[in-house]
Length: 198
View 1 (cartoon, rainbow, N blue to C red):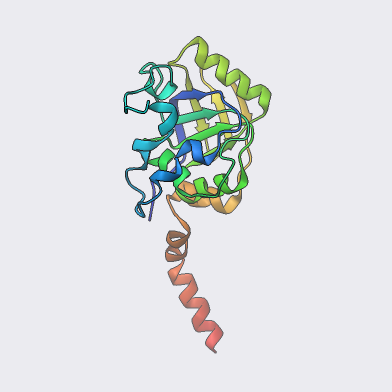
View 2: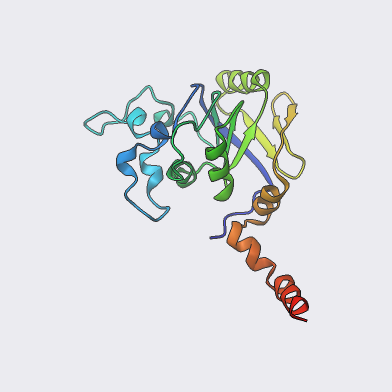
């Protein structure tokens, strides 16, 4: 399944300054029955967003209309816990295309990269600057530049570089998943196979 190409994302951001956000908090286990990657966004952070009677919890950030955007800024150790792919699906389906944190659980990071979400790891000091910038002005915009591997707080011009695997970077910038990547190489693969036969 192809995804939107990710090159440069400029957006406001939603702050979630909570450490150790695990995958069961991102998408509770009772919502994992579906096999398609649709509808999971409705239950993103379900138990934090809604009361038992399904009324929205007014103090949760996703229910606060002043915070919007395609970037989610999370605390340290984001995506820990079980390996469920659905956590990344829920974040993507809700509309986020980038998650910024000072540390990601490896499996969550891999699952995100596989479906078109860019997980950006920054230093704790820079993460704190991002949180403070959003707190001072919820309309603060961030720029996430994948080709240059840099995230910038546009209001101040402060920026920091981030690392990413070259293969995953190639796929994100082209909107590929692993199968799309192979399909894009069909001609080369066929030529190699032809050559190998003889």
